[in-house]
Length: 314
Image (cartoon, rainbow, N blue to C red; front, side):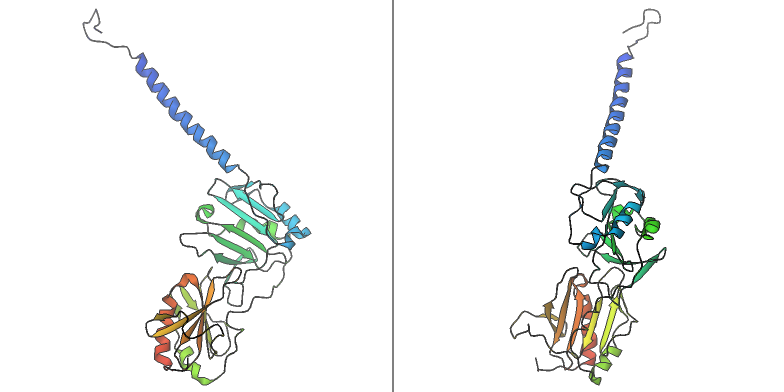
């Protein structure tokens, strides 16, 4: 359109302004809608399964649950889906950021004299990591409380923090302290001879296997262990007999110079197997979590090749 006075072209800006305003409103509406949907997801009740935990019904656990804070790691306290299990609580910021807690659980099998405990505000915690590939889930157990507490979250829930338990300090004072009996160290239930033939092997075992460090805990003669925080230990015992489950012709695994027979001992809360060395003059067995893979067998096999002799007795 040409202006009659100046002779210059002119156009109506109103539609453009309206379009820009509508565009801005659309963006705002989208952001608001996303925020509402996000908040609704965050406020959804958390579903927690009912487990066989008789102590969850105890008076102590009820008082503990009532004393829990409104926020843990910045996540607000969430409702639980009915029927809510006894002794349970949760905190949630979104569908992927949450922390769950149970009171009155059983101690995991990983709790033994080899366990590495971390103190937080006077409470001793045992960390157990989920060894499923790509999983970052971890559970912290308050092992010296009469009613054991378990707190579970993953990397999303931690949001950069080391653990979720610091915010529970005051509530934990409700629970009585006690000394629970640790579970036996793996392989200690096996009968082993006390001969000197295993001394050279144990003496030359490595200080480190992958991320595991040699434990300084005193064990039976012919034994050694390696530990890593949050993971099941690697334990070796020399001088043992072969298991009854082994028969010639069963599946075996050869790693370098040593042939191994795996006797699977998978129990509740453990992924460990017992690996027996074939064809050596000293009966050797290694308890090893599945997540370690063959790396431990490679390292230990090298020492066995150097400090035990081949034998045709098996």
